[in-house]
Length: 89
Image (cartoon, rainbow, N blue to C red; front, side, top):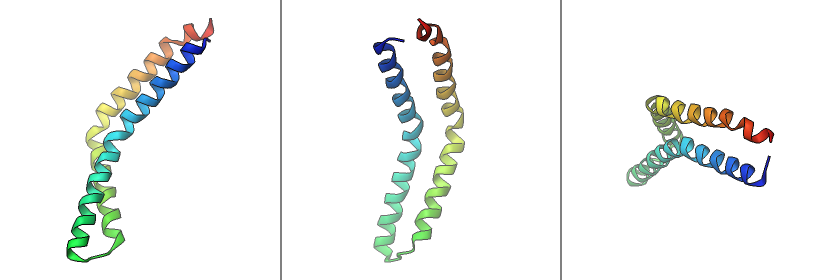
């Protein structure tokens, strides 16, 4: 296994992890920011409201994005398995 192969495999792994995490983190950020602004405007400082809404929104986004997420993960897995012969030499 060459140095270049290790670097490329590491790069692909990090990019795939970012691709899988970015949509859910973006949803959580948007919902959290919206709830924080609404709580500030209405002066309601209940933490469970923000947590429950973020949990629901991220769960719903995960449900909607599941086919895409699985496609990205499976493509990365196939690519990893295909590169096994190059790792042996």
